[in-house]
Image 1 (cartoon, rainbow, N blue to C red):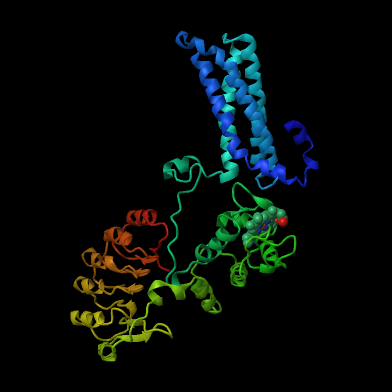
Image 2 (cartoon, rainbow, N blue to C red):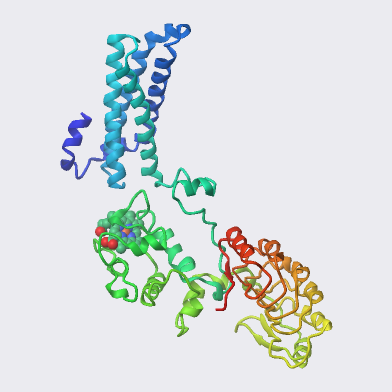
Length: 468
Ligand code: HEC
């Protein structure tokens, strides 16, 4: 019956519900032949020892149960395939491996029934083949439902390399300031992941297109022009997401949750500027046309820190900082966060200035102390400025002994240590700064081996080690 249905596959373009209903049971039913066939193989092997000889009489029964349940699994599997949601290549091999496995199981049954457990090379070859096919079919079945990387998803990196897979990706930290938003990793890829990869992954490569990584997106799908860098309107992907929803080619298909208008604008812009694989949005968006759109899209307004209501800074404190040579600016219109910059001051920073800064520890989110003769001892107090998001310490005589005091800066996203004396102390510091996205280490005593380790241990981090 299964075979007849298979050969007439074309007729069943609109399978009745009952067929689709039964098909859904395939993943459950397949466990029966797996169990019975493993049992049959074990019995077959065991019965060779005199002690287990009496088991021989059960061997044909085990094979028969394995074969019959395999037949049912094949039929249900065929029903399931009619829903047409699977990668055709893997499906082809899975289907035929399953059918051959089923036929061979019947073969084993007849051989055992006829010739008992007498030893013969062809028979053992057949049993061995059944065992092999069982694993092969099951593996392909797993790939169909979970994508071909499922098995090794949590494997240690060395095992992943052996299988030709890239190293494990750490989940990306949530963006907290617009400046650290990456055009691909924080905008494009998450959109694809939430709305498109359900049908465009290794297991279900609809339209021949994978939307799981930059390389795969650029390789494109069946059309020659899936993404045309620099020309959004010529890109098939843009055409698909901007069609009227009822159009047959509209993506995502099957009434799945479509991209929002914001998302469509962002994708079009990304392609227009050349579909770069990375880059900070604020740097790419030279006309600053998208600033508010992107920060809104990334939910930055809702971000913990910036959502916090802080009291206005004490004007007397602000004035005393200004008198000491600080430039103080409000960071945003509708709250009291401030940006303090000493890098242009003509005065020399003193330890007592740190105490004044501390009085603004709630409001102070950006602090620039570049080339300001900051000493290690000052960093103890700077480490208490808990709301700092951006800290610039470039060109100061500071070392590992000082920066270890920065470990409590849990909001810090950008740290500039260019031109300082720090060395491998960064390796200890960085993991403690859970939100850190960008660190500048050019012209320090951090070696290139340290840099390699830093990058390896903190994959989401951008390390700037050369002149920009
Ligand atoms: C429910 C499944 C499903 C979802 C979700 C889905 N697609 Fe598709 N996609 C398909 C199918 C099926 C095809 C192939 C048939 C066709 O060409 O319409 C396809 C084809 C495509 C193609 C054409 C490939 C080429 O290069 O010729 C593009 C581009 C595409 N999809 C983009 C997307 C994008 C972008 C999203 C997310 C917004 C998305 N798809 C979500 C099912 C889906």
